[in-house]
Length: 69
Image (tube, rainbow, N blue to C red; front, side, top):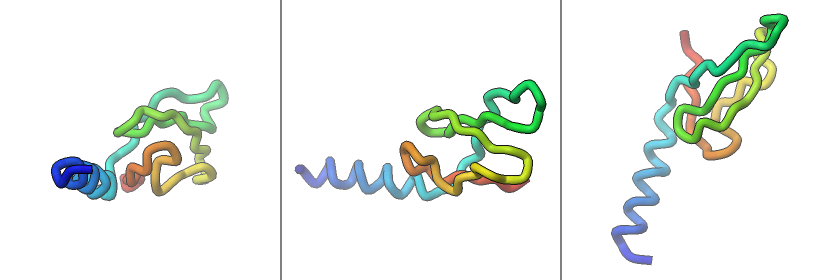
């Protein structure tokens, strides 16, 4: 692996540590469950209103998630 490739992977890893807001994708019919998508890889995941399922990092790509209002 070249130095350029190593630096590229390191920069990508550091970038994923900067929290980003998730994208709201949809609501379920009852309105008690939100479906979010990761801002980096668009992987969908569910979060209910009491916070269950609220990841600090995307389970697929590792992007830090910013849940602040």
